[in-house]
Image 1 (spheres, rainbow, N blue to C red):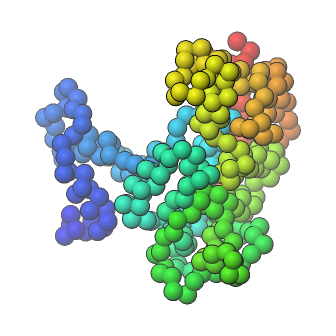
Image 2: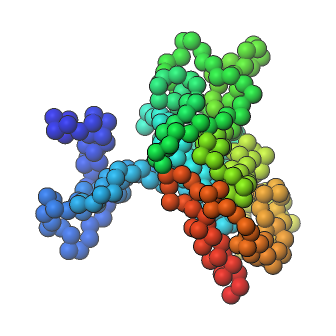
Image 3: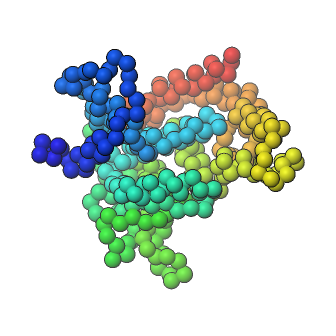
Length: 343
């Protein structure tokens, strides 16, 4: 593959795919012409990923190369699902806009996956992440970027500290960071009581700077910022995860005898309260703080969505330039929510 002009890293990735037999095989797709179809390749390629999946262009298609985020778990509420989905979409945008380099060794990715399974990993554990994520080996975020809309945008960053890095550190160095530091940023300290090390911008501040640069305003900015601030609070540990909340609920249940046995009665009570939270009938500030808009009667939620649909929102304030996510698409999504709640 290298002699045919394939990038060294891509060639190594593809070569590693073929060290094992395919996990699945479909009837009628065993004897194929590999010069006219990629089904055999995709049969192996599509069953190998950790947190992202490489997606080459389909055969005879003008669709480009893609990287698909695969690390998401379904959440308890639509609000959480929307928050994390929006963050993933906007993270992909800043990777392209700022030309971020997020490469770390695969062994560290595997280590991160194992760490993520530890109890209360969000607040108690640290994960390997690249120190300098900017492409030109500097530690400063770019003051402008060329958008896919064809225009140059100028982000406005909202940090109250300068970026600095230990002079002895390598450009490709990675470090153990908390999720709070990865998502919300890490300041460079000069006093001896705290680890000076390096400063890190944080993914969420970079996303907010991107939204400023492409002039997302009004209702759309307010809505997206609410989602981003919610994820920020989860990453910082200000709000607990659902797993942590369920552990607290079970351990404090009057029928729990501290013997690691979760009885049917406890399970039934847990499912019932989770159902009430999801429907908006039960407030849960430990999980959502004041972010979740449906911590009240379902009718309140329905009416708030209907107000969104009738709001006078300028079309241009709800457009992510260079992309297809417009106010009309969001409008249709809210319409489907209201239609579902009216049933």
